[in-house]
Image 1: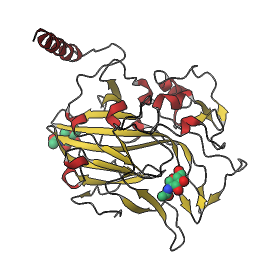
Image 2: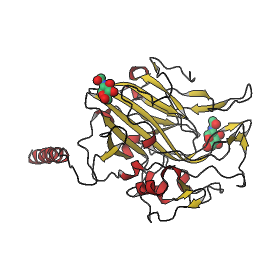
Image 3: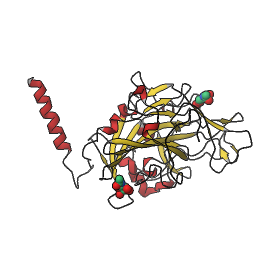
Image 4: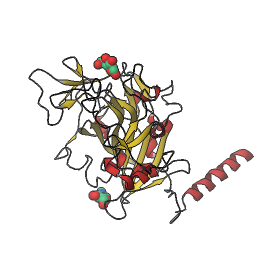
Length: 352
Ligand SMILES: *[C@@H]1O[C@H](CO)[C@@H](O)[C@H](O)[C@H]1NC(C)=O
Ligand SMILES: *[C@@H]1O[C@H](CO)[C@@H](O)[C@H](O)[C@H]1NC(C)=O
């Protein structure tokens, strides 16, 4: 009884302390993580033949070096970490590619590109592989972004040829809450995605956590298992040739078990301000505007080719800050798709 009340007292104290705004001090600390962000967090199913698993966000920085036009950026901090990554914004910013120090196409590939297979509880042990970012509009509407990180993207095969393989892969789903109740969800898929009513998407174990199916290799997010046709923007594939994503209930990944938690706000309108929910979450890296993987390899690179204007080895993606974290009225990122259609149902195995 005595220990119960002591624990209760300390829990109470912790809530009080973390609730005090720390204006002017760095790093900024947000108030308290709304509990519904974890309560309704997605459960992710990775494909049963997946070879590239969720990966440690910090390891990506440790295993790469910043480059512009295939040349190392001079004057970057050493070592580069999640705490100083944003200093690259002043050294080239969006032109920068975090480029592997190792040969990414060696056989076998460097271990860090493979990521970590979730354990029996769904945790990626030793790898913080998800960044959960909460945007509270202050009017009852709260958007929770679940940003999934994979060190490598395997793009798939068309006519027996691989393409769109790249280092670094950021994917996300977003859940919009109204007064703590989930309303709608966004599932990112390549340059696009789909929005659904929360009530329409399948739930894990008949409960309240939505299921996200991560496609084999590309890690595009779907609400159903099966085969999903997808086209490449700006690329006309020959008739009868399709680029296909596969999803099934392979490996269970609970991204909340090894994640960084931060809030985002937009006090000046457009520039995001990130704040950690706890003292161990690094946040400076969230401001980095460059790419999280190598630049598309040059034609002279062994094994590089292009078909239909699409390269076998393409460029790494930008990070969470580039996913339109200020969606206001919409569930879809701005302009994608336009208009934002929120589907009241899911269709097994097929994208609409
Ligand atoms: C899944 O991806 C791996 C490579 O990452 C590939 O070897 C395997 O054939 C793919 N599975 C399917 C069903 O396409
Ligand atoms: C809440 O605030 C956001 C940002 O100002 C706005 O876009 C949205 O319409 C508001 N939602 C409601 C339900 O008032």
